[in-house]
Image (cartoon, rainbow, N blue to C red; front, side, top):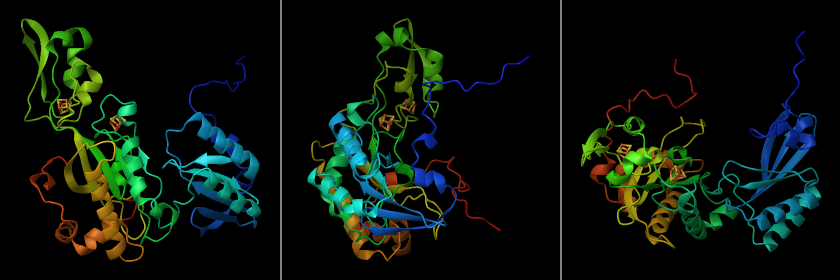
Length: 360
Ligand code: SF4
Ligand code: SF4
């Protein structure tokens, strides 16, 4: 006889999300009628049954100290029955069933210097990757850049004054763990030189066939150096992606002199009005200039300010640029048009399907 399947308890993967749903959300699953923004940072979802759930959205720096996490937990216990969630852009949202708790919660968040906002036509929290604090292949920092950019754009988080929402993303290399391909403004770390090969260590640290196979442009070939097996790079084919370094630690790509930051604009995931779009290059290279990255923050602020002044209501950044035309965008921003703006990647077919909108 086959024993009945027992649900095994395991620590692999996250626990089932239902365990953490607010009881009102559980009871009204699939019955939500509409939602609206009550004020900056506060949403209400209304069910067919008349039940309401309020969310108060606050900023988080993504990399949180245990003190900040404890603070969020205490506030959730006090005002939202212990229920909160993190959005994909690292906002923290408190789920409240009692409307009277909204303002006291916001006041206490503000007393702790945690701003409330990020809803509707604002700049939500910036989604970002690991940066120098953690990842081996980063060409720039992530947390540092996010901090200085948001210092400059802070009022757009708390006040709903933009034509539409603006999503900003930071990824510290073109592996893009962040959503830089589909955000309104994307800041992307770039390497600009091929990896340096440590021939002495390579044989001991790396597997040559998998190192060769790791290169998406087939730039790596096996070779012998001083009679020992190693690899060589065809530098003309290298696109400085750093894939090989992830596979072979004897091919470091980080370069303090040449690494930097590029800026991309006009991506979106939304299907509203126009189809989803990938970001396009605005600035190919700005230097890494910590701790304030002045060149990067000025460029981002310039794009946001021009968009705020010039876009029509409900136009996303990409839709605004498409309407005024890319030449006009470069004219308005003063960004230089360079050879890097010409997309010569021959495999990027025009037929990539990026939308769920139907073609008939
Ligand atoms: Fe690492 Fe690149 Fe991801 Fe940044 S984007 S965390 S450098 S893999
Ligand atoms: Fe190939 Fe990328 Fe390594 Fe260049 S950096 S050799 S393109 S894997």
